[in-house]
Length: 553
Ligand SMILES: *[C@@H]1O[C@H](CO)[C@@H](O)[C@H](O)[C@H]1NC(C)=O
Ligand SMILES: *[C@@H]1O[C@H](CO)[C@@H](O)[C@H](O)[C@H]1NC(C)=O
Image (cartoon, rainbow, N blue to C red):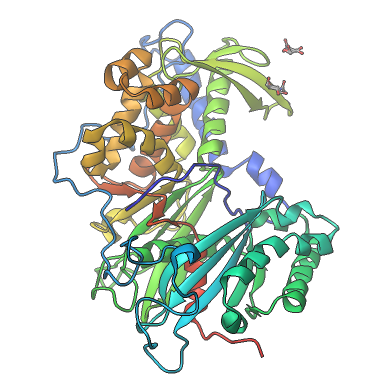
């Protein structure tokens, strides 16, 4: 089952942006579009004959693009089924905590397994450990995984997780110190992995984009020092050729897809034949990712070639995946975009704008306010404004702003497009009934409501659940009290975070307008399955362990 772990910020990979990344971030393509649209709509608003739906001092309700026909009605009742437990054989995963080891502390023998006494094939060891170091920008984390070879492909048993701060990228110009910073993590692996198995235990270090920002020479020096120290000080088998690398952005999404589908038993060699795979939608702070396996029914349609296409062999099957990372569409960046747009629209209307102004923002719930820092695109620099929800906080008005931010109407060169001009096979056509798993902020924002409402938690979740909640939350405190007044934790959350209305509205728009999912489409949210984080690490390790492993001489 899915369970929670404390949330944090989602560090995402934003690779492939090259040296001009800064500029790109400041002027993402959608923005030109959105600003253009606002100028046109704003002028129309100012000059046009539109009747006033305006609450004095509020943001006008701008024309809703007619590309949408969003249905906010609640979905028809369906049998409870959300958060389905992964289908797997009892002996595959530690699903019976009282019987099966969940870590070294309750594992009777680290060099054996409780699942069988001899390996499936004589050519493979009974027990296989693997080490994956996730070198993020805030810290480095090791995942020590235990697998057994009781079946035709490695079966995951459990992981040991340790973290150290700061990250490798904090050691600019000091590659030796950077390499040494991982010692504590590897020493932990020395404690867990039995001596006889160490030389056949693969280790990989995958750095995220933070390291790339140091520049090519600096980051290469750090990676070289890490490789050398691993070889010199530890007995593990450093994977060649890409054991110590900066990970490609698309690998991250695809590895997370492997993690999810492996744990859900849809891609293992023992998975039920034709088990449909999950689509994985991840919402981080800076970017949002989608990975799924489209099915083209018609023989004349197929996936266009390009960066987005990822061919993967796993568990004896070939999978052709679509993956894309939308930079600038993470939750934190979406908030900034909405704030900038709201402020800009205010300035067009000639109401208070610029430094220290109080700006009315329909994406804040009624009666809430928040100080936000705005990057000034016109004059450069930053300034603070106070955003207030006043009495205009409303899902409908907020949704119109979010729709502009989505850049749904951006030029689409290779059809079909999801949003911002990005090619994506239609989920409706090529993934009509497959399951969708939503991760990271999707989970974090829904979780407090699931915890507060038994009705919500026991019914299946739908895309429209986000819309319904957004609508309720945007109405402000009187509605919160009415609906969730009994839940102190949720009330505290709502009162402490004025952006709840914005966040939920954006998530709904991303699913509904961005990915064109129907409101009635069932979704699942998750963060962990049986104690294992639904990130890229397990998937990357499975890809490593599934390949031909070389032991160290
Ligand atoms: C805004 O407030 C800051 C801090 O109080 C002040 O330094 C600044 O001069 C103010 N700016 C304007 C334009 O009033
Ligand atoms: C905006 O306000 C925050 C919090 O008070 C402050 O840290 C920041 O420096 C301010 N930014 C500007 C540009 O005034």
